[in-house]
Length: 226
Image 1 (cartoon, one colour):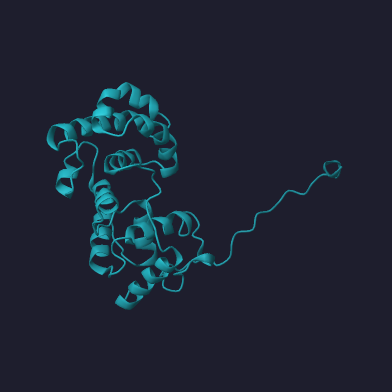
Image 2 (cartoon, rainbow, N blue to C red):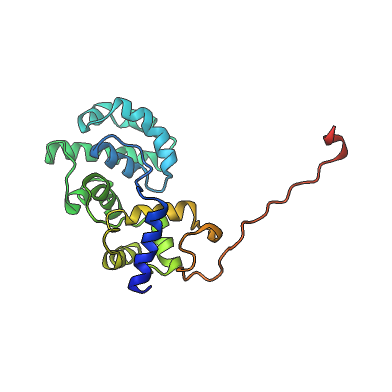
């Protein structure tokens, strides 16, 4: 896309949703970090169901370590990969206590050194907790970046670096939230809902779905009408 098209792309997303944010429920930077780690290969909705009760009991690294891996595993067993995630959350909580005075660090390098924390998770925490202009690339952002032609790339890091290069002010801080939400609710994986997309004319995706699919209803038998 040309520079003016990129600006218009985000201007429209911003106009449609002036205050985007993560759909993960959290209390502070620590609970945000835990929620993001739990959200890997899981939906935000499924994570929220588990953490609503968990965060009533646990809000600090010390409380998480005291809870223990077995109890944490039980609390998050409805989330995919819960065994590995429980182990990582306990380990990262221990690392925060040991190395960071129980505080969530504010640099990507320190965040990525924590168990279970990759680049995407670090970017989410830096952006949402600390207001950094980072670009977390999940499956939605990766799809939207490639499908629309906004920031094509073969791997998430390529998409991230292109977004960092092309996204202008005043949209940089919230850009990845707009792209996530756009991919989650409009530019869907199987069938993008182009008929209600605010950036449809800027998008390079060619087989656009410009009308919603009509669902066919089974004709009722005569006795079902009684």
